[in-house]
Image 1 (cartoon, rainbow, N blue to C red):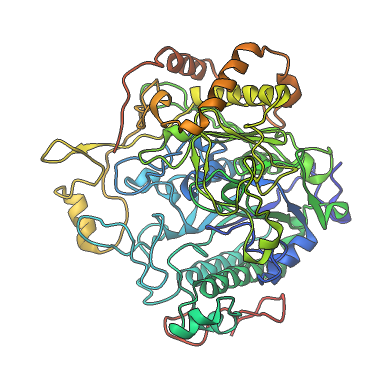
Image 2: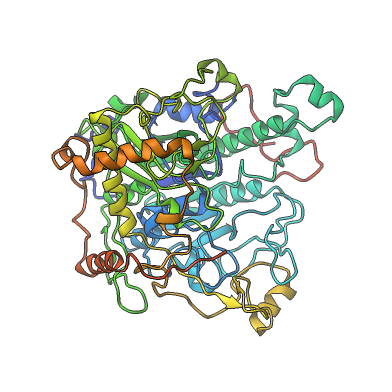
Length: 626
Protein backbone atom coordinates (compact mmCIF):
# COMPACT_ATOMS: atom_id res chain seq x y z
CA UNK A 1 0.00 0.00 0.00
CA UNK A 2 1.00 3.64 -0.45
CA UNK A 3 2.91 4.97 2.53
CA UNK A 4 1.80 8.04 4.51
CA UNK A 5 3.48 11.31 3.63
CA UNK A 6 5.63 11.34 6.78
CA UNK A 7 7.11 7.97 5.76
CA UNK A 8 8.29 9.13 2.38
CA UNK A 9 5.11 8.64 0.40
CA UNK A 10 1.80 10.38 -0.07
CA UNK A 11 -1.41 8.64 0.86
CA UNK A 12 -4.16 9.23 -1.65
CA UNK A 13 -6.44 9.74 1.35
CA UNK A 14 -4.56 12.97 2.05
CA UNK A 15 -7.02 15.83 1.49
CA UNK A 16 -4.49 17.87 -0.48
CA UNK A 17 -3.59 16.90 -4.02
CA UNK A 18 0.02 16.32 -5.09
CA UNK A 19 1.97 18.60 -7.39
CA UNK A 20 2.49 17.02 -10.82
CA UNK A 21 5.51 17.76 -13.03
CA UNK A 22 6.18 16.14 -16.39
CA UNK A 23 9.52 16.69 -18.16
CA UNK A 24 9.28 15.58 -21.80
CA UNK A 25 12.41 15.62 -23.96
CA UNK A 26 12.32 15.64 -27.74
CA UNK A 27 14.08 12.82 -29.63
CA UNK A 28 16.15 11.63 -26.66
CA UNK A 29 17.24 8.09 -27.49
CA UNK A 30 17.70 5.04 -25.29
CA UNK A 31 21.46 5.49 -24.99
CA UNK A 32 21.36 9.24 -24.45
CA UNK A 33 21.28 8.95 -20.65
CA UNK A 34 24.18 7.97 -18.47
CA UNK A 35 22.60 4.85 -16.94
CA UNK A 36 22.40 3.34 -20.41
CA UNK A 37 25.61 4.85 -21.74
CA UNK A 38 28.56 5.77 -19.50
CA UNK A 39 29.83 8.23 -22.13
CA UNK A 40 26.71 10.39 -21.71
CA UNK A 41 26.72 12.93 -18.89
CA UNK A 42 23.35 13.42 -17.14
CA UNK A 43 24.08 13.90 -13.42
CA UNK A 44 20.78 15.54 -12.54
CA UNK A 45 18.75 12.78 -14.14
CA UNK A 46 21.02 10.31 -12.34
CA UNK A 47 20.04 11.89 -9.04
CA UNK A 48 16.32 11.65 -9.85
CA UNK A 49 16.78 8.03 -10.86
CA UNK A 50 18.57 7.23 -7.59
CA UNK A 51 15.80 8.92 -5.60
CA UNK A 52 12.98 7.48 -7.66
CA UNK A 53 11.99 4.61 -9.96
CA UNK A 54 13.59 3.70 -13.27
CA UNK A 55 11.05 2.61 -15.89
CA UNK A 56 12.93 0.16 -18.07
CA UNK A 57 9.93 -0.68 -20.27
CA UNK A 58 8.46 2.72 -21.10
CA UNK A 59 7.13 3.11 -24.65
CA UNK A 60 6.09 6.05 -26.82
CA UNK A 61 5.14 6.52 -30.47
CA UNK A 62 7.76 6.68 -33.20
CA UNK A 63 7.09 10.37 -33.92
CA UNK A 64 6.72 13.31 -31.59
CA UNK A 65 3.26 14.86 -32.16
CA UNK A 66 1.35 11.56 -31.71
CA UNK A 67 3.23 10.89 -28.46
CA UNK A 68 2.26 14.30 -27.14
CA UNK A 69 -1.34 13.77 -28.20
CA UNK A 70 -1.34 10.41 -26.39
CA UNK A 71 0.10 11.93 -23.22
CA UNK A 72 -2.43 14.76 -23.06
CA UNK A 73 -5.55 12.80 -24.09
CA UNK A 74 -4.89 9.29 -22.77
CA UNK A 75 -5.52 7.78 -26.21
CA UNK A 76 -3.27 5.62 -28.30
CA UNK A 77 -1.90 7.67 -31.21
CA UNK A 78 -4.04 5.70 -33.68
CA UNK A 79 -7.09 6.94 -31.74
CA UNK A 80 -6.28 10.63 -31.94
CA UNK A 81 -3.49 11.80 -34.27
CA UNK A 82 -1.19 9.21 -35.76
CA UNK A 83 -0.71 11.23 -38.93
CA UNK A 84 1.61 14.05 -37.83
CA UNK A 85 -0.27 16.97 -39.40
CA UNK A 86 -0.33 19.84 -36.93
CA UNK A 87 0.74 22.90 -38.87
CA UNK A 88 -0.89 25.04 -41.51
CA UNK A 89 -3.90 22.88 -42.49
CA UNK A 90 -7.12 23.86 -40.75
CA UNK A 91 -7.63 21.34 -37.98
CA UNK A 92 -4.93 18.75 -37.45
CA UNK A 93 -3.20 18.20 -34.15
CA UNK A 94 -5.66 17.04 -31.50
CA UNK A 95 -9.38 17.16 -32.26
CA UNK A 96 -10.85 20.23 -30.56
CA UNK A 97 -13.48 18.12 -28.79
CA UNK A 98 -11.02 15.87 -26.95
CA UNK A 99 -10.72 16.97 -23.32
CA UNK A 100 -7.06 17.24 -22.39
CA UNK A 101 -5.38 16.41 -19.08
CA UNK A 102 -4.91 20.02 -17.89
CA UNK A 103 -8.61 20.77 -18.36
CA UNK A 104 -9.58 17.86 -16.12
CA UNK A 105 -6.97 18.85 -13.53
CA UNK A 106 -8.28 22.43 -13.45
CA UNK A 107 -11.70 21.10 -12.50
CA UNK A 108 -10.26 19.92 -9.18
CA UNK A 109 -8.29 23.07 -8.43
CA UNK A 110 -4.94 22.66 -10.18
CA UNK A 111 -2.91 25.58 -11.50
CA UNK A 112 -1.90 24.25 -14.91
CA UNK A 113 1.10 25.53 -16.86
CA UNK A 114 2.83 24.67 -20.12
CA UNK A 115 6.34 25.67 -21.18
CA UNK A 116 8.16 24.54 -24.31
CA UNK A 117 6.99 22.61 -27.33
CA UNK A 118 3.26 22.28 -28.15
CA UNK A 119 2.83 20.49 -31.52
CA UNK A 120 -0.84 19.68 -30.91
CA UNK A 121 -2.42 22.09 -33.40
CA UNK A 122 -2.68 25.85 -33.75
CA UNK A 123 -4.69 26.77 -36.86
CA UNK A 124 -7.61 28.13 -34.80
CA UNK A 125 -7.68 29.63 -31.28
CA UNK A 126 -9.47 26.60 -29.81
CA UNK A 127 -6.43 24.43 -30.55
CA UNK A 128 -3.95 26.59 -28.61
CA UNK A 129 -2.62 25.48 -25.19
CA UNK A 130 -4.66 28.00 -23.21
CA UNK A 131 -7.83 26.73 -24.88
CA UNK A 132 -7.01 23.13 -23.88
CA UNK A 133 -6.80 23.67 -20.13
CA UNK A 134 -3.51 25.45 -19.46
CA UNK A 135 -3.74 28.65 -17.42
CA UNK A 136 -0.45 29.89 -18.87
CA UNK A 137 1.75 28.86 -21.77
CA UNK A 138 5.14 29.99 -23.03
CA UNK A 139 6.54 27.97 -25.89
CA UNK A 140 6.39 27.29 -29.59
CA UNK A 141 3.39 25.92 -31.46
CA UNK A 142 4.83 23.88 -34.31
CA UNK A 143 7.11 20.89 -34.52
CA UNK A 144 10.44 22.63 -34.85
CA UNK A 145 12.15 25.99 -35.10
CA UNK A 146 15.56 27.58 -34.82
CA UNK A 147 16.79 27.60 -31.21
CA UNK A 148 18.19 31.13 -31.52
CA UNK A 149 16.00 33.07 -33.96
CA UNK A 150 12.84 31.07 -33.08
CA UNK A 151 11.84 31.09 -36.74
CA UNK A 152 9.70 28.15 -37.77
CA UNK A 153 11.08 25.64 -40.25
CA UNK A 154 7.61 25.56 -41.86
CA UNK A 155 6.80 28.07 -44.57
CA UNK A 156 3.67 30.14 -43.93
CA UNK A 157 2.41 32.11 -46.94
CA UNK A 158 5.94 32.59 -48.22
CA UNK A 159 7.55 33.42 -44.86
CA UNK A 160 9.28 31.58 -42.04
CA UNK A 161 7.57 33.18 -39.08
CA UNK A 162 8.82 33.51 -35.52
CA UNK A 163 7.26 30.66 -33.54
CA UNK A 164 7.21 31.81 -29.91
CA UNK A 165 3.85 31.80 -28.18
CA UNK A 166 2.66 33.51 -25.01
CA UNK A 167 -0.48 32.97 -22.94
CA UNK A 168 -2.58 35.58 -24.75
CA UNK A 169 -0.30 37.12 -27.36
CA UNK A 170 3.18 36.30 -28.62
CA UNK A 171 5.74 37.30 -25.97
CA UNK A 172 8.03 40.22 -26.42
CA UNK A 173 10.77 39.61 -28.95
CA UNK A 174 13.65 38.14 -27.01
CA UNK A 175 16.42 38.50 -29.55
CA UNK A 176 18.87 35.65 -29.92
CA UNK A 177 18.14 33.81 -26.68
CA UNK A 178 18.35 30.03 -26.66
CA UNK A 179 14.76 28.81 -26.53
CA UNK A 180 15.20 26.19 -23.79
CA UNK A 181 16.70 29.01 -21.70
CA UNK A 182 13.46 30.97 -22.18
CA UNK A 183 11.35 27.99 -21.14
CA UNK A 184 13.65 27.28 -18.18
CA UNK A 185 13.27 30.87 -16.95
CA UNK A 186 9.50 30.74 -17.41
CA UNK A 187 9.28 27.53 -15.34
CA UNK A 188 11.36 29.01 -12.52
CA UNK A 189 9.20 32.15 -12.49
CA UNK A 190 6.03 30.03 -12.27
CA UNK A 191 7.40 28.05 -9.34
CA UNK A 192 8.66 31.16 -7.55
CA UNK A 193 5.27 32.87 -7.53
CA UNK A 194 3.19 29.72 -6.93
CA UNK A 195 1.31 29.18 -3.67
CA UNK A 196 2.36 25.67 -2.49
CA UNK A 197 -1.08 25.17 -0.95
CA UNK A 198 -2.54 25.07 -4.47
CA UNK A 199 -1.93 21.87 -6.49
CA UNK A 200 0.48 22.59 -9.33
CA UNK A 201 0.76 20.93 -12.76
CA UNK A 202 3.76 21.80 -14.94
CA UNK A 203 4.13 20.30 -18.40
CA UNK A 204 7.71 21.16 -19.33
CA UNK A 205 8.30 20.02 -22.92
CA UNK A 206 11.88 20.81 -23.82
CA UNK A 207 13.00 21.41 -27.40
CA UNK A 208 16.32 19.64 -26.76
CA UNK A 209 17.82 17.57 -28.19
CA UNK A 210 15.72 17.83 -31.37
CA UNK A 211 17.25 19.19 -34.57
CA UNK A 212 18.69 21.62 -35.50
CA UNK A 213 21.85 20.82 -33.56
CA UNK A 214 22.44 24.10 -31.72
CA UNK A 215 23.71 24.76 -28.20
CA UNK A 216 25.32 27.61 -26.21
CA UNK A 217 29.09 27.65 -26.60
CA UNK A 218 29.58 27.36 -22.85
CA UNK A 219 28.05 23.90 -22.90
CA UNK A 220 29.90 22.84 -26.02
CA UNK A 221 33.25 23.71 -24.43
CA UNK A 222 32.53 21.51 -21.47
CA UNK A 223 31.46 18.48 -23.52
CA UNK A 224 33.95 15.74 -24.44
CA UNK A 225 34.57 15.16 -28.13
CA UNK A 226 33.49 11.64 -29.12
CA UNK A 227 34.02 12.10 -32.85
CA UNK A 228 37.06 10.65 -34.63
CA UNK A 229 39.98 13.07 -34.71
CA UNK A 230 39.95 13.03 -38.52
CA UNK A 231 36.46 14.57 -38.54
CA UNK A 232 37.14 17.51 -36.22
CA UNK A 233 40.63 18.13 -37.63
CA UNK A 234 39.24 18.59 -41.14
CA UNK A 235 36.38 20.87 -40.07
CA UNK A 236 36.62 22.30 -36.54
CA UNK A 237 33.27 22.35 -34.77
CA UNK A 238 31.79 19.76 -37.15
CA UNK A 239 31.34 16.99 -34.61
CA UNK A 240 27.58 16.54 -34.54
CA UNK A 241 27.77 13.96 -31.76
CA UNK A 242 29.52 16.50 -29.53
CA UNK A 243 26.87 19.13 -30.20
CA UNK A 244 24.13 16.62 -29.49
CA UNK A 245 25.79 15.54 -26.24
CA UNK A 246 26.04 19.19 -25.20
CA UNK A 247 22.32 19.65 -25.90
CA UNK A 248 21.54 16.66 -23.69
CA UNK A 249 23.71 18.19 -20.95
CA UNK A 250 21.84 21.47 -21.28
CA UNK A 251 18.50 19.67 -20.95
CA UNK A 252 19.82 17.75 -17.94
CA UNK A 253 20.82 21.02 -16.27
CA UNK A 254 17.38 22.51 -16.96
CA UNK A 255 15.72 19.55 -15.26
CA UNK A 256 18.15 19.85 -12.36
CA UNK A 257 17.45 23.57 -11.90
CA UNK A 258 13.68 23.22 -12.10
CA UNK A 259 13.74 20.27 -9.70
CA UNK A 260 15.85 22.26 -7.26
CA UNK A 261 13.40 25.16 -7.46
CA UNK A 262 10.57 22.80 -6.55
CA UNK A 263 12.58 21.51 -3.59
CA UNK A 264 13.42 25.04 -2.42
CA UNK A 265 9.76 25.99 -2.58
CA UNK A 266 8.89 23.12 -0.25
CA UNK A 267 6.84 21.35 -2.91
CA UNK A 268 9.04 18.31 -3.61
CA UNK A 269 7.83 16.04 -0.81
CA UNK A 270 4.29 16.53 -2.05
CA UNK A 271 5.10 16.00 -5.75
CA UNK A 272 5.11 13.34 -8.45
CA UNK A 273 7.78 14.05 -11.07
CA UNK A 274 8.01 12.15 -14.35
CA UNK A 275 10.75 12.32 -16.98
CA UNK A 276 10.46 10.66 -20.40
CA UNK A 277 11.31 11.09 -24.06
CA UNK A 278 8.69 11.39 -26.77
CA UNK A 279 10.51 8.95 -29.10
CA UNK A 280 13.83 7.50 -30.07
CA UNK A 281 14.80 6.88 -33.69
CA UNK A 282 12.20 8.38 -36.00
CA UNK A 283 9.59 6.40 -37.89
CA UNK A 284 10.55 2.96 -36.67
CA UNK A 285 8.75 0.54 -34.39
CA UNK A 286 11.99 -1.20 -33.53
CA UNK A 287 12.93 -0.92 -29.86
CA UNK A 288 15.26 2.01 -30.51
CA UNK A 289 12.39 3.96 -32.02
CA UNK A 290 9.71 3.44 -29.37
CA UNK A 291 11.35 2.22 -26.14
CA UNK A 292 12.54 5.37 -24.38
CA UNK A 293 14.31 6.29 -21.13
CA UNK A 294 11.93 7.27 -18.33
CA UNK A 295 11.77 7.61 -14.57
CA UNK A 296 9.50 8.68 -11.71
CA UNK A 297 10.67 10.75 -8.73
CA UNK A 298 9.38 13.13 -6.07
CA UNK A 299 8.10 12.74 -2.54
CA UNK A 300 5.09 10.75 -3.72
CA UNK A 301 7.39 7.78 -4.38
CA UNK A 302 7.34 5.51 -1.28
CA UNK A 303 10.67 5.00 0.48
CA UNK A 304 10.79 1.29 -0.29
CA UNK A 305 10.43 1.99 -4.04
CA UNK A 306 13.25 4.51 -4.31
CA UNK A 307 16.18 3.29 -6.35
CA UNK A 308 14.09 0.48 -7.85
CA UNK A 309 14.28 -0.52 -11.51
CA UNK A 310 11.04 -1.88 -12.96
CA UNK A 311 11.77 -4.21 -15.84
CA UNK A 312 10.48 -7.21 -17.74
CA UNK A 313 7.24 -8.10 -19.46
CA UNK A 314 5.18 -7.16 -16.39
CA UNK A 315 6.60 -3.62 -16.20
CA UNK A 316 5.16 -2.03 -19.34
CA UNK A 317 4.14 1.63 -19.27
CA UNK A 318 2.81 3.47 -22.32
CA UNK A 319 2.98 7.23 -22.65
CA UNK A 320 -0.84 7.36 -22.76
CA UNK A 321 -0.95 5.85 -19.25
CA UNK A 322 0.15 9.09 -17.59
CA UNK A 323 -3.23 10.63 -18.38
CA UNK A 324 -5.10 8.10 -16.21
CA UNK A 325 -2.30 7.91 -13.65
CA UNK A 326 -2.11 11.66 -13.02
CA UNK A 327 -5.87 11.89 -12.79
CA UNK A 328 -5.93 9.01 -10.29
CA UNK A 329 -3.32 10.48 -7.94
CA UNK A 330 -5.04 13.87 -8.24
CA UNK A 331 -8.42 12.27 -7.51
CA UNK A 332 -9.82 13.93 -10.60
CA UNK A 333 -12.54 12.44 -12.84
CA UNK A 334 -11.26 10.36 -15.72
CA UNK A 335 -14.15 11.41 -17.96
CA UNK A 336 -15.15 14.98 -18.87
CA UNK A 337 -18.43 16.49 -17.75
CA UNK A 338 -19.76 16.42 -21.32
CA UNK A 339 -19.75 13.75 -24.04
CA UNK A 340 -16.78 13.89 -26.40
CA UNK A 341 -18.21 13.73 -29.90
CA UNK A 342 -17.44 14.98 -33.37
CA UNK A 343 -19.62 17.49 -35.24
CA UNK A 344 -22.08 14.76 -36.22
CA UNK A 345 -22.55 13.64 -32.62
CA UNK A 346 -20.57 10.43 -33.05
CA UNK A 347 -18.54 9.57 -29.96
CA UNK A 348 -14.80 10.09 -30.14
CA UNK A 349 -12.58 7.13 -29.13
CA UNK A 350 -12.58 6.49 -25.37
CA UNK A 351 -9.49 6.70 -23.17
CA UNK A 352 -6.91 3.93 -23.60
CA UNK A 353 -4.54 4.89 -20.79
CA UNK A 354 -4.26 2.79 -17.63
CA UNK A 355 -3.61 3.90 -14.07
CA UNK A 356 -0.15 2.50 -13.32
CA UNK A 357 0.22 4.13 -9.88
CA UNK A 358 -0.65 0.96 -7.89
CA UNK A 359 2.22 -0.74 -9.75
CA UNK A 360 4.66 2.16 -9.35
CA UNK A 361 3.91 2.56 -5.65
CA UNK A 362 4.31 -1.15 -4.95
CA UNK A 363 0.69 -1.82 -4.07
CA UNK A 364 0.65 -4.50 -6.77
CA UNK A 365 3.58 -6.37 -8.27
CA UNK A 366 2.83 -5.96 -11.96
CA UNK A 367 1.69 -3.33 -14.43
CA UNK A 368 -1.92 -3.48 -15.63
CA UNK A 369 -0.61 -3.02 -19.16
CA UNK A 370 -0.19 -6.29 -21.03
CA UNK A 371 -0.37 -5.06 -24.62
CA UNK A 372 0.64 -1.97 -26.56
CA UNK A 373 -0.44 -1.27 -30.13
CA UNK A 374 2.44 0.82 -31.44
CA UNK A 375 1.41 1.79 -34.94
CA UNK A 376 -1.32 1.22 -37.46
CA UNK A 377 1.34 1.58 -40.13
CA UNK A 378 -0.93 1.52 -43.14
CA UNK A 379 -2.53 4.74 -41.93
CA UNK A 380 0.62 6.66 -42.73
CA UNK A 381 0.75 8.66 -45.98
CA UNK A 382 3.02 7.58 -48.83
CA UNK A 383 5.84 6.77 -48.70
CA UNK A 384 4.61 4.96 -45.61
CA UNK A 385 7.57 4.23 -43.33
CA UNK A 386 6.34 0.89 -42.07
CA UNK A 387 3.53 -1.47 -41.28
CA UNK A 388 1.53 -1.98 -38.14
CA UNK A 389 3.17 -3.16 -34.92
CA UNK A 390 2.00 -4.42 -31.55
CA UNK A 391 3.51 -5.76 -28.32
CA UNK A 392 1.68 -8.40 -26.30
CA UNK A 393 3.47 -9.89 -23.33
CA UNK A 394 7.08 -10.57 -24.26
CA UNK A 395 6.42 -10.66 -28.01
CA UNK A 396 6.37 -7.95 -30.66
CA UNK A 397 4.87 -8.33 -34.13
CA UNK A 398 5.93 -5.89 -36.85
CA UNK A 399 4.60 -5.65 -40.40
CA UNK A 400 5.99 -3.92 -43.45
CA UNK A 401 9.41 -2.30 -43.65
CA UNK A 402 10.94 -0.88 -40.49
CA UNK A 403 13.78 1.59 -40.56
CA UNK A 404 16.86 0.69 -38.49
CA UNK A 405 16.55 1.96 -34.91
CA UNK A 406 18.39 -0.35 -32.57
CA UNK A 407 18.68 0.85 -28.98
CA UNK A 408 22.48 0.65 -28.93
CA UNK A 409 25.23 3.17 -29.74
CA UNK A 410 28.88 3.03 -30.67
CA UNK A 411 29.66 2.71 -26.98
CA UNK A 412 27.77 -0.56 -26.88
CA UNK A 413 28.53 -1.90 -30.35
CA UNK A 414 30.37 -4.86 -28.86
CA UNK A 415 27.06 -6.09 -27.45
CA UNK A 416 25.46 -6.40 -30.90
CA UNK A 417 25.92 -9.65 -32.74
CA UNK A 418 27.35 -9.48 -36.26
CA UNK A 419 25.96 -12.90 -37.08
CA UNK A 420 24.33 -12.63 -40.51
CA UNK A 421 22.63 -16.01 -40.57
CA UNK A 422 19.14 -16.22 -42.03
CA UNK A 423 17.32 -15.44 -38.81
CA UNK A 424 19.72 -12.89 -37.31
CA UNK A 425 19.65 -9.26 -38.42
CA UNK A 426 22.94 -7.34 -38.66
CA UNK A 427 22.98 -4.05 -36.72
CA UNK A 428 21.81 -0.81 -38.39
CA UNK A 429 19.85 -2.68 -41.05
CA UNK A 430 16.23 -2.13 -41.95
CA UNK A 431 13.78 -4.99 -41.52
CA UNK A 432 11.52 -6.11 -44.33
CA UNK A 433 8.74 -7.97 -42.58
CA UNK A 434 6.19 -8.14 -45.41
CA UNK A 435 2.49 -8.48 -44.65
CA UNK A 436 3.11 -11.62 -42.61
CA UNK A 437 5.37 -9.93 -40.12
CA UNK A 438 8.48 -10.35 -38.04
CA UNK A 439 8.19 -11.75 -34.53
CA UNK A 440 10.60 -10.94 -31.72
CA UNK A 441 10.88 -11.96 -28.10
CA UNK A 442 11.87 -8.46 -26.93
CA UNK A 443 12.58 -9.59 -23.37
CA UNK A 444 15.14 -12.22 -24.35
CA UNK A 445 16.24 -10.37 -27.49
CA UNK A 446 16.09 -6.59 -26.83
CA UNK A 447 18.33 -5.85 -29.83
CA UNK A 448 15.81 -7.56 -32.13
CA UNK A 449 18.44 -9.66 -33.85
CA UNK A 450 16.56 -12.96 -34.02
CA UNK A 451 13.35 -12.99 -36.03
CA UNK A 452 11.32 -15.97 -34.83
CA UNK A 453 8.96 -15.97 -37.81
CA UNK A 454 11.04 -17.69 -40.53
CA UNK A 455 11.48 -20.90 -38.52
CA UNK A 456 8.32 -20.57 -36.47
CA UNK A 457 6.86 -23.72 -35.07
CA UNK A 458 3.29 -24.23 -33.97
CA UNK A 459 3.71 -22.20 -30.78
CA UNK A 460 5.17 -19.13 -32.48
CA UNK A 461 2.69 -19.34 -35.35
CA UNK A 462 -0.10 -19.33 -32.79
CA UNK A 463 1.42 -16.29 -31.11
CA UNK A 464 1.69 -14.48 -34.45
CA UNK A 465 -1.92 -15.26 -35.27
CA UNK A 466 -3.11 -13.86 -31.94
CA UNK A 467 -1.00 -10.72 -32.26
CA UNK A 468 -2.35 -10.15 -35.77
CA UNK A 469 -5.84 -10.56 -34.36
CA UNK A 470 -5.18 -7.86 -31.76
CA UNK A 471 -3.62 -5.63 -34.41
CA UNK A 472 -6.74 -6.00 -36.54
CA UNK A 473 -8.86 -5.11 -33.51
CA UNK A 474 -7.08 -1.78 -33.08
CA UNK A 475 -7.00 -1.18 -36.82
CA UNK A 476 -10.80 -1.40 -36.89
CA UNK A 477 -11.11 1.35 -34.28
CA UNK A 478 -8.48 3.72 -35.67
CA UNK A 479 -9.31 7.40 -35.75
CA UNK A 480 -7.52 10.44 -37.15
CA UNK A 481 -8.13 14.06 -36.19
CA UNK A 482 -9.32 15.64 -39.40
CA UNK A 483 -7.92 18.55 -41.35
CA UNK A 484 -9.27 20.66 -44.19
CA UNK A 485 -8.06 19.98 -47.70
CA UNK A 486 -8.13 22.68 -50.38
CA UNK A 487 -7.66 22.41 -54.14
CA UNK A 488 -5.00 24.32 -56.02
CA UNK A 489 -5.48 25.79 -59.50
CA UNK A 490 -4.86 22.37 -61.05
CA UNK A 491 -7.33 20.58 -58.78
CA UNK A 492 -4.67 18.97 -56.61
CA UNK A 493 -5.13 18.46 -52.87
CA UNK A 494 -3.10 20.91 -50.82
CA UNK A 495 -2.87 21.46 -47.08
CA UNK A 496 -1.48 24.99 -47.09
CA UNK A 497 -3.56 27.86 -45.67
CA UNK A 498 -5.58 30.17 -47.89
CA UNK A 499 -3.20 33.12 -47.88
CA UNK A 500 -5.80 35.42 -49.45
CA UNK A 501 -7.89 35.61 -46.26
CA UNK A 502 -7.46 38.75 -44.13
CA UNK A 503 -6.52 36.72 -41.05
CA UNK A 504 -3.80 34.76 -42.85
CA UNK A 505 -2.46 37.95 -44.44
CA UNK A 506 -2.35 39.67 -41.05
CA UNK A 507 -0.57 36.67 -39.56
CA UNK A 508 2.06 36.70 -42.30
CA UNK A 509 2.56 40.45 -41.96
CA UNK A 510 2.97 40.20 -38.19
CA UNK A 511 5.95 37.91 -38.62
CA UNK A 512 4.79 35.71 -35.71
CA UNK A 513 3.21 32.27 -36.04
CA UNK A 514 -0.19 31.65 -34.46
CA UNK A 515 -3.85 30.95 -35.15
CA UNK A 516 -4.83 32.07 -38.63
CA UNK A 517 -8.50 31.13 -38.99
CA UNK A 518 -11.74 30.87 -37.06
CA UNK A 519 -12.83 27.87 -39.12
CA UNK A 520 -12.80 24.38 -37.68
CA UNK A 521 -12.43 20.80 -38.78
CA UNK A 522 -14.19 18.74 -36.15
CA UNK A 523 -15.90 15.87 -37.96
CA UNK A 524 -14.69 12.30 -38.47
CA UNK A 525 -13.91 12.50 -42.15
CA UNK A 526 -11.12 9.95 -42.05
CA UNK A 527 -12.92 7.15 -40.25
CA UNK A 528 -15.65 4.75 -41.35
CA UNK A 529 -13.50 2.94 -43.89
CA UNK A 530 -11.80 5.94 -45.49
CA UNK A 531 -8.02 5.95 -45.46
CA UNK A 532 -5.30 8.14 -46.80
CA UNK A 533 -2.88 5.33 -47.68
CA UNK A 534 -3.29 2.29 -49.87
CA UNK A 535 -5.31 -0.57 -48.50
CA UNK A 536 -3.60 -3.40 -46.71
CA UNK A 537 -4.14 -5.73 -49.67
CA UNK A 538 -1.78 -3.74 -51.90
CA UNK A 539 0.16 -1.64 -49.42
CA UNK A 540 3.41 -3.59 -49.71
CA UNK A 541 4.80 -5.64 -52.55
CA UNK A 542 5.92 -8.89 -50.96
CA UNK A 543 9.42 -9.90 -51.94
CA UNK A 544 9.84 -13.27 -53.58
CA UNK A 545 12.15 -14.41 -50.79
CA UNK A 546 9.26 -14.01 -48.34
CA UNK A 547 6.59 -15.86 -50.30
CA UNK A 548 7.27 -19.17 -48.57
CA UNK A 549 6.78 -17.54 -45.17
CA UNK A 550 3.55 -15.90 -46.37
CA UNK A 551 2.16 -19.22 -47.48
CA UNK A 552 3.17 -20.94 -44.25
CA UNK A 553 1.54 -18.25 -42.12
CA UNK A 554 -1.61 -18.30 -44.23
CA UNK A 555 -1.88 -22.05 -43.71
CA UNK A 556 -1.34 -21.61 -39.99
CA UNK A 557 -4.13 -19.04 -39.76
CA UNK A 558 -6.53 -21.55 -41.24
CA UNK A 559 -5.49 -24.31 -38.84
CA UNK A 560 -5.13 -22.42 -35.56
CA UNK A 561 -8.28 -21.87 -33.56
CA UNK A 562 -8.99 -20.13 -30.26
CA UNK A 563 -7.63 -20.90 -26.87
CA UNK A 564 -4.30 -19.12 -26.99
CA UNK A 565 -5.74 -15.70 -26.33
CA UNK A 566 -5.76 -16.01 -22.56
CA UNK A 567 -2.11 -16.98 -22.57
CA UNK A 568 -0.96 -13.78 -24.23
CA UNK A 569 -3.84 -11.32 -23.92
CA UNK A 570 -5.33 -10.45 -20.59
CA UNK A 571 -5.44 -8.09 -17.68
CA UNK A 572 -8.10 -5.67 -16.56
CA UNK A 573 -8.20 -1.92 -16.89
CA UNK A 574 -6.92 -0.43 -13.65
CA UNK A 575 -8.38 2.78 -12.31
CA UNK A 576 -11.58 4.19 -13.72
CA UNK A 577 -14.62 2.72 -15.32
CA UNK A 578 -14.77 1.11 -18.71
CA UNK A 579 -15.08 3.97 -21.16
CA UNK A 580 -16.39 2.00 -24.09
CA UNK A 581 -19.45 3.47 -25.70
CA UNK A 582 -22.14 2.03 -27.90
CA UNK A 583 -21.62 4.92 -30.33
CA UNK A 584 -17.96 4.06 -30.75
CA UNK A 585 -18.82 0.37 -31.13
CA UNK A 586 -21.10 1.40 -33.98
CA UNK A 587 -18.24 3.29 -35.59
CA UNK A 588 -16.02 0.20 -35.37
CA UNK A 589 -18.77 -1.96 -36.82
CA UNK A 590 -19.24 0.49 -39.68
CA UNK A 591 -15.50 0.43 -40.38
CA UNK A 592 -15.63 -3.34 -40.69
CA UNK A 593 -18.72 -3.20 -42.94
CA UNK A 594 -17.01 -0.69 -45.21
CA UNK A 595 -13.76 -2.61 -45.44
CA UNK A 596 -13.96 -2.52 -49.24
CA UNK A 597 -15.06 1.10 -49.49
CA UNK A 598 -13.15 3.41 -51.85
CA UNK A 599 -9.86 4.57 -50.42
CA UNK A 600 -8.98 8.19 -49.74
CA UNK A 601 -5.32 8.86 -50.42
CA UNK A 602 -3.18 11.92 -49.80
CA UNK A 603 -0.06 12.06 -51.65
CA UNK A 604 19.02 32.46 -21.14
CA UNK A 605 22.01 31.89 -23.26
CA UNK A 606 22.89 34.30 -26.07
CA UNK A 607 24.14 33.26 -29.46
CA UNK A 608 27.87 33.54 -29.87
CA UNK A 609 28.50 34.02 -26.17
CA UNK A 610 30.87 31.85 -24.20
CA UNK A 611 28.72 32.39 -21.12
CA UNK A 612 25.46 30.73 -20.30
CA UNK A 613 22.71 31.68 -17.90
CA UNK A 614 22.60 27.98 -17.08
CA UNK A 615 25.92 26.43 -16.11
CA UNK A 616 26.73 22.97 -17.35
CA UNK A 617 27.77 21.77 -13.90
CA UNK A 618 29.71 18.72 -15.04
CA UNK A 619 31.31 18.33 -11.60
CA UNK A 620 28.20 18.67 -9.49
CA UNK A 621 24.64 17.37 -9.68
CA UNK A 622 23.25 20.57 -8.19
CA UNK A 623 21.48 23.56 -9.73
CA UNK A 624 23.74 26.44 -10.62
CA UNK A 625 23.33 29.84 -12.22
CA UNK A 626 25.86 32.50 -13.17
